[in-house]
Length: 149
Image 1 (tube, rainbow, N blue to C red):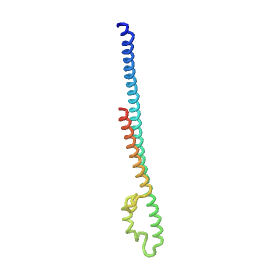
Image 2 (image 1 turned 180 degrees about the horizontal axis):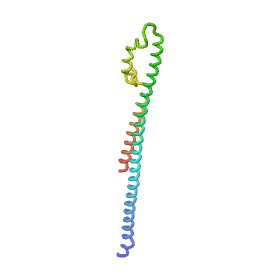
Image 3 (image 1 turned 45 degrees about the horizontal axis):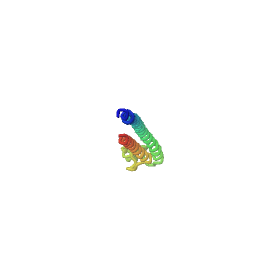
Image 4 (image 1 turned 90 degrees about the vertical axis):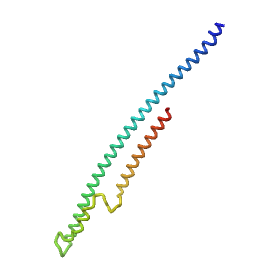
């Protein structure tokens, strides 16, 4: 009987223990790999978020520059048209007929009677695209996290 135990049972138990231990190490290795992937995805997400924030800041700066340049252009255009109108006036002096220029000056730059310019529409679409991009990145990370568990 002892020889049967040594020949049959002990090798079977040893084999099953070895399989069990190797499955534990494989699971631990898989968990480490998944943990590294998760950290990598989180780092990528934070980098993309920082990049998006920088781009949004740049967009705001460009919007301000555009508004400033538009107001300068309007001032130059209105100045040249007012000078032409003053030259063509017969009855009054240079300052006659400027009563309505105050209402034009009261309008803020970038306001064109309630309509949005093509550039403003593009900026709104770009902002929406950035928000959707960040949302998709969040969804992908959460899917990866839920699949790994």
